[in-house]
Length: 345
Image (cartoon, rainbow, N blue to C red; front, side, top):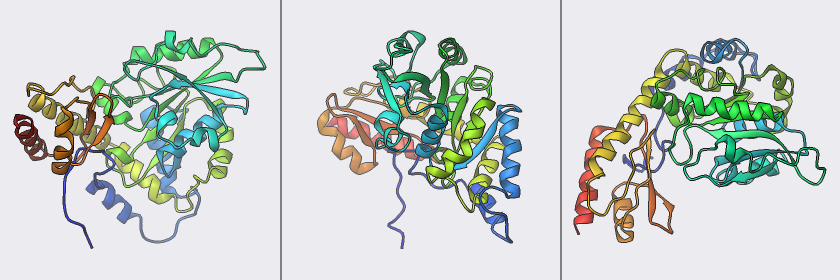
């Protein structure tokens, strides 16, 4: 029933399941386990998450990244409160209005040159405290790595957390590609989350080799009591949760998360080296696993017929090339050859 084997650079969501994760799911597919998270594998995941993020960390597995973001922000905000985020943030442009529609949260957007917030940029929207006519800023939400493929350093996250906390606000980290960010800066997951002052993390697994596994990881104990209720009311409570939890156990118990992320980041560097000197291509060196080159308009569709990818900004002919845990050197070499051939024409 397959439509054939093919490779592309459209998204790390296009990749399959890492064999170790697929095997782990098969290994737990026997016997009965208590439903809705009271199973031994979700309990095991709790220990794994504390190992990665610290003893106060609490994990709430969910179906997808949008769900992780929505329920986490909902637990952090009262109905009259708001979230400060970059205009390019996934919660703003790629979640179909779910934070507003499902959680009822106002998003206060800030234009950024590279997808990254700074304390100074946060100040553009973090004002009006006590003004009943303005949604009250309560959360600063950042993405690491960002939607532009840029990466926050530990110091940058800490500066944002310090600024948010000084204003009585929380800080949330959308970590759909958190593994790629950690691999890029060469640090632990805890270093730029818990230790930097982050209150909650949307922990991504799907883009890094899971079948479909994300989690809301709460680092601030004050936020824990609301989580089980907002998860259920937002339709993110899995009955057979063991199959979500075991994916995250297989990924984060040892170093599979890091190996996969290091590989996809390395493939992005290989792709950059292959195309950076081609006449007609404008591109900056990737920080994680994505490139955002600008190409001649006439070359885009022919190259999409070679390997699927998305147009990022049609106004300037900018595209996105995303490498995955299973991207091979042959994938890169073949695509570089196609780019050279197409632009030579």
